[in-house]
Image 1 (cartoon, rainbow, N blue to C red):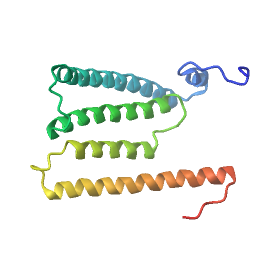
Image 2: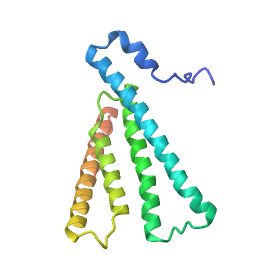
Image 3: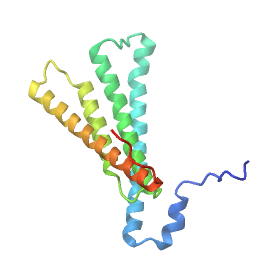
Image 4: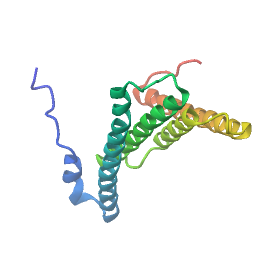
Length: 169
């Protein structure tokens, strides 16, 4: 049974194997992706450390009231910032590991949706105008539709490759 499983490959092994065959531009892309991945990982670690640094004293002192709207906004805004950075790093790592040749539009749309969601969570509706809230809602709806369309397109292509008939609806 263990003979059927592939041994886990070391990170960037594909890159090392393909390096001699890569063009100068492809090598440049790989180096940039690896450096960016490292930098974003550092940012994620710093953000996570700051999140712990902010939360632990509140929890230890018993002052963390998650039902307080301002605490909720601050806490979940920080958590979503870490999640956005992690998704961004994931897309860079996928590029660096050559699973994708370029950063996919769907990933960019997803990150934009996460950023807008974060903005809506931390938004103070008492000081924000209705036009701004409507604009953010419209942008979120538009990006949601684009994401759905991109996902539907990928699903359709996958069905065509596998020879399955398209589903109704």
